[in-house]
Length: 449
Image 1 (cartoon, rainbow, N blue to C red):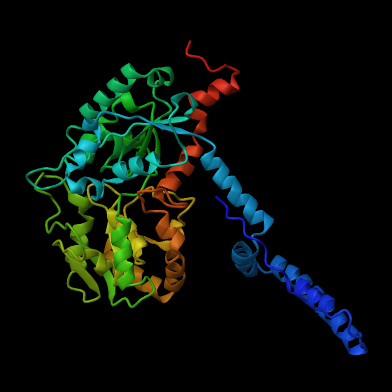
Image 2: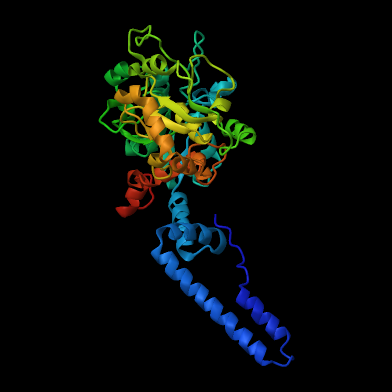
């Protein structure tokens, strides 16, 4: 909410009060001249400020910043109030499902901290949110909290989502028999999270995910998913919002306390992660569409590239030391490295053709990152050299804006501008799917009949 601050007294007001205090003193010619000069100076100041702000685009930008922080001009205040009003002017009902659908999984601490944990973070944030309602009849959206990413493989430790479809089907069966709200809208105002490789297709391999597609039971709902591309794809043929993968805000804060974003960066180009020396994975598929293999073969011997194939617990501290962070696709186009790079002030070099990135209205991706086509990965060093020689400082200045980092991180309690806040902004643009609002528009009264 807006904090209403008592406006500061102007210098003119201060001068006037001083003069009143001494009103018994004899007003000399010097005093009259001083008063005239002071008033005239203030007049010139405000007139010149108006013309400078109007004619200079850069000054416009600066004056907006100053007015927001010092004067809270009416335009800025109105815009902010409208944003808050739009977000808080609707309600979400959070289903209280049996614990086997969600909180039972939290017995494994990784469930709430690994890269797919946005399903947990969003659920937790909504529970204490101002948009939450306990009355389902006044809800515009219905959130279904099912944690499908916490079934960790005993073989490799990675999340296994083989059970995802059956678990979600069971949850839908539960809410549709216990409540009327799913059936009345056929799920169109219900919200799910699918924070996995290929989102609501619930499979880690693209060819299999495309064949299986999105489960029929979800096709009418809204899905918050990490997967998104700018071209037609079976795994996004549902009303969806692209969200970032989960990166612990506490982990980021701890790193930034030791290495601020504008601190020394002694690594020019950085990548640490899974890299296939031979492009075909043991599954017989081409991992990363060969991109990571090319990076390893072409640049692992280049001293400017700090490239490692093995895990390291201090991985994020290496990002904080780097100028450029390579973010090539893996099995899916998106990568947690994109968020980690932004959060820790390293310019993300995104190598994933057609990727759709989260919250473009809040994060100016074109101004904070470098995009490299998959076919141009062999030219990577030349591309980065050109960026370093031309607009690197501009990119870093935009990247280091705290609001950018904030927009991609989920907090346990919603904070203005954070990732869950951005989800709420996105949902506010989908209120046409609200069954409650459609009834109001059609003039129906609240009724169970």
